[in-house]
Image (cartoon, rainbow, N blue to C red; front, side, top):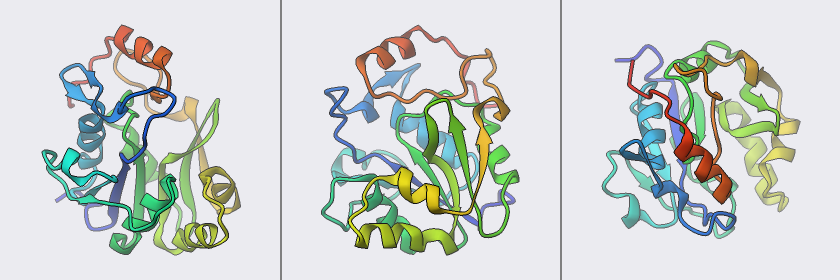
Length: 203
């Protein structure tokens, strides 16, 4: 059993419609795996308590982890966060389905930065990354309050939380020295992904 096994519940957001990309990015293939498979593999490197948060359960049944359809009607990642909430005992690890380019050491590194009562979240040049972070169970109320108030965007709620910010340059580097992670949102991102030849072998 991994040292942090009993402490972490991972929720992978896979229910987006990928409007900017025009197709379901979760199933884009890179180096023999779909993006969602990469995310599942990384999450399982730190805990076996991994849940996929998706609106279409059937599309993800081939993956070896439970699929939780949103309990809430809003089309927002916040719905997925609240859906996985009851399964969180101590810490929630949130991941997007499209972050593939990070070192095997990144999630253990984030775990090592934790402090009781504070979220641990990555800050990149684009700002805080809510879907690359760890959240103690006592902060789940922030998400619930945001939903009740109709504030469905994650960034404003995250800004209210006590947190530890980890700068992008502090993250463990992938083997080939590429960027620590890459979000797939636009066609240009897919082209960039295709150009990269980072060695993603499990260490």
